[in-house]
Length: 135
Image (cartoon, rainbow, N blue to C red):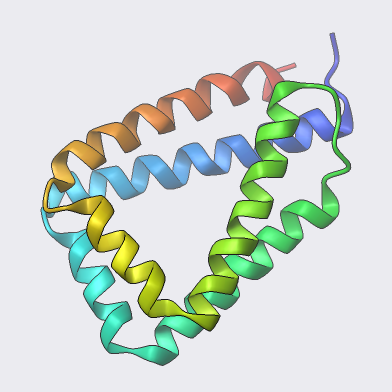
């Protein structure tokens, strides 16, 4: 069955999420503490935190504005990713200290476990995108 435009778009977003997650996990597994160093860098550089917020916000806007929904569950995931990125970007711009504090609490010093969970997310995203992009 050929994919609809919305579903094909969702497949590409899921592929991008998988690739991002895979690369992030590899970074942390190869260089333990890299994620915490990035968070510390954002904390010490307000301009970088603001720019990060802009990138997140506009990426979310691009996903949400160009995705016209659809009936597949992957379309719903794409919509949630778009809105989530917009929200995270807005928080990064308005209150970077809040989101960085949340990041500290989430990581809690056990970055290896989070990196492995991120690999699982990457695999799930690739599995979800695979049948769409090869249709």
